Image 1 (spheres, helix red, strand yellow):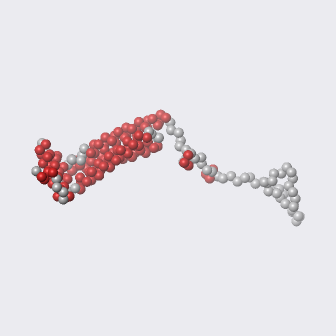
Image 2: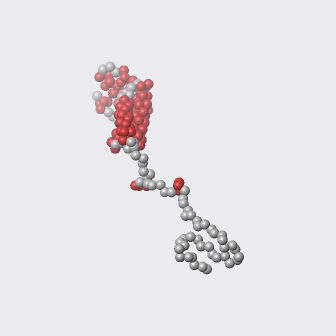
Image 3: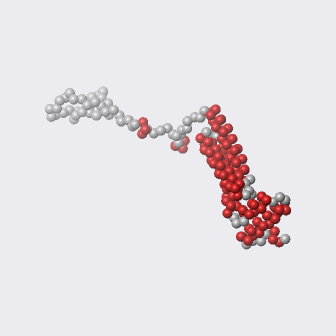
Length: 190
C-alpha cells in the first residue's frame, strides 16, 4: 500500500495503484460534499420553536386595531340588544337567538383579528366577556323557550298595561313554577 503525498488532503479518497495491468491515467474526480435540499434544511425558529412572524406595518396594525375595537363595541351592543328580547312574544323572541349568535360570532372574529394583528391584551378580555354574556343570554333564552308557561307569561307581560297587570302575570308564572318544582312561594301566602 502506498502512502499519500504530503500535499494531498487526507479526506479525499485515494486510488490504490493498480497491479493488474490497468491503465495508470484513469483519474476519478474527488466527490463534492453532500448538500441537503433547501426544503430539508432546518428553518430558523424563534423562542419556543415557532417560526418567526413577519413584521406588520405599524399603520396597518393601527387600522386593524381600530376596526377590531369597533367590532368589539358592535358585538357588545348586539348581545345587549339580544337580552332585550327575553320578555318579547314569540316572533320577536326568536330575535334573541339571532342577535346573541351574531354577537358571539363578532367577538370570535375580533379575537382572531387581535391575534393576527397583535392587538392589545384587553381586546381578548372584552371579547371573552362578550362571549360569556352572549352564552348566558342564549342559555336563558333556551330555558325560557322550553319552560312550560313561559310563552303565556311573555304574552301576559306584553299585554299588561299597568303595574298591577304585570304583578298578576308574575303571580301566575310563579304559581306555574311552584307547581313544576313543588316549592311554595311568598305569593301563595297572600
